[in-house]
Length: 451
Ligand code: UDX
Image (cartoon, rainbow, N blue to C red; front, side):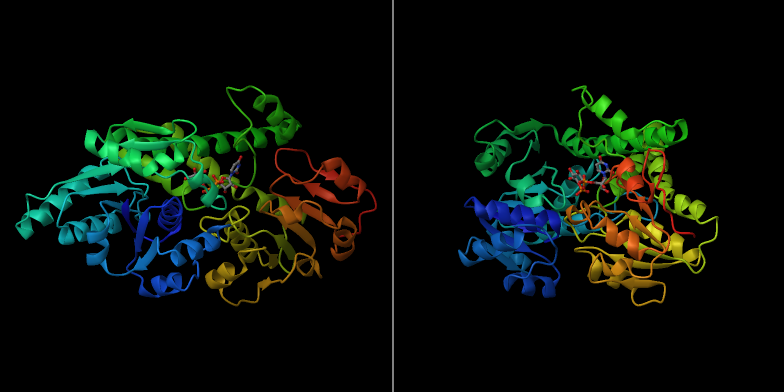
């Protein structure tokens, strides 16, 4: 089938590439000429395991093309994906200007029936807006006889495993009431739904809400767990034991109940806020979602509070080694990353940071530039040199079994503030560390150096 994808961000690029991989003819279009030029040369603007090889392979076979030429792109695809960004407005609601601009572009250039697929995460009611905008443009062109159908087909991929998620989706949501469209969409996704039926057809508004409900449910699990972790710390319980205790109930499950330093990334914070705004706009007070958001904002400050308290409220002149900058492992994404809230609080308090992340160093440099209070280190070991304590914010694999003797030797005051519960508190104490984690009492080793 001929498919056009507007937007070469995470969602668009991965979706376009995966569709080409199963044999569809895909054109990806973007207004950013520099990005398109780079993609043509096989340079991927994001870090996503497995993507680069697939882009190169499918470009070479001619199934995947990149262009800025909207006329050509609209002529190509019977199916036109909209996978452009929906940034948050100042008030937190999703900004639809890019989505509606693409709708206009399609209506401007189309010469035959088109299926428009909303792949971006867009508020309930967006498909109607896209339809209305397209109808206006067609009317203006004097081509009101041209037909189209707008489908909601939300994406559930995770950064860091986007390719695998897209190739093996849990479900494929198709929101439309048009039977002919359903048939076309079934054919498009047939290669992904072979072994088990993955396609769930529903009306367009339910499909739009499904995406928000999924992300908000997951964010709720995290905030709930963070709340229980805070309680556990105060009650003297161990959240890791509690996590296993509740996860064993299949109604609760083990996924997404890891306490930590709060959720970040491009989806959860934005989607929780957007659904709150959607509810507000129709006069409904979404009490649960507001609490989820508030708990998350507070959770991002908890590590800093522990560090400050440990150093007796005085951080001026201190140096902290920081492991992990990206909002989660296997990505270089720093959007809404808890590391940013932490670093900014440390700087505000007069401390310096020596940071290391396996992927997000360039992005950190881009965000914060060169400044005295931040040293970006080439390895996790160099980040320790001359530091007072170690702080861990992202649970990268390479942090799981570090050389604890070296860490102990390097730190002037061997304490570890672990925002991801990577280590066993008893073991840390045996190694001579003062060890703080989330939802567990601090453990204190003997043989402490004097502060
Ligand atoms: C998420 C959804 O998982 C995905 O389905 C949707 O399409 C987009 O949003 P992503 O933002 O890439 O994907 O990351 P995810 O792996 O879900 O993690 C989100 C955040 O939650 C991270 O900051 C992570 O550290 C945090 N998290 C996750 C926890 O704190 N605890 C957990 O148990 C799980």
